[in-house]
Image (cartoon, rainbow, N blue to C red; front, side, top):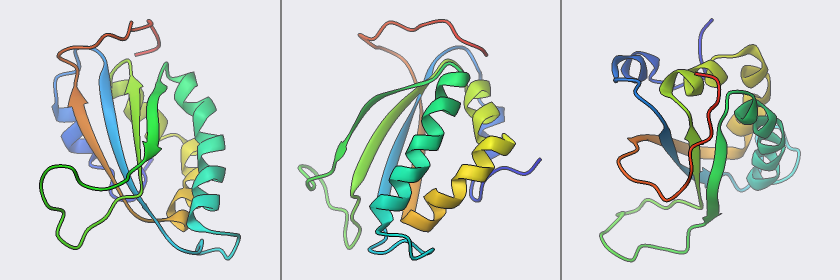
Length: 137
């Protein structure tokens, strides 16, 4: 089954899968949703409501989310990001299981309608104060 547009599945599968990972989501919203149903934020909110049960199903959780206020160090050039989400998964396999599921592909339409750009950075966990709960791998 093909994954969502721009999922770098081969790269993710090539990484060692030795425990929890955090996906750093950077999101830039469209002013209006492509389907005409509210703003980009509205469409992304619909996507998020569908995504949360899928995230939990594979043992993942959102550990932090918030509005980006600006750059404190560095220079983004002409770029901007509106929203950041840190989602923790018990493994890379769990992330891929969710992202390639038919349930995810069905709700991903709202994400695509709502976001102008969305980058997900994969980060292996070298330190965390958060307890890792066992979940499906």
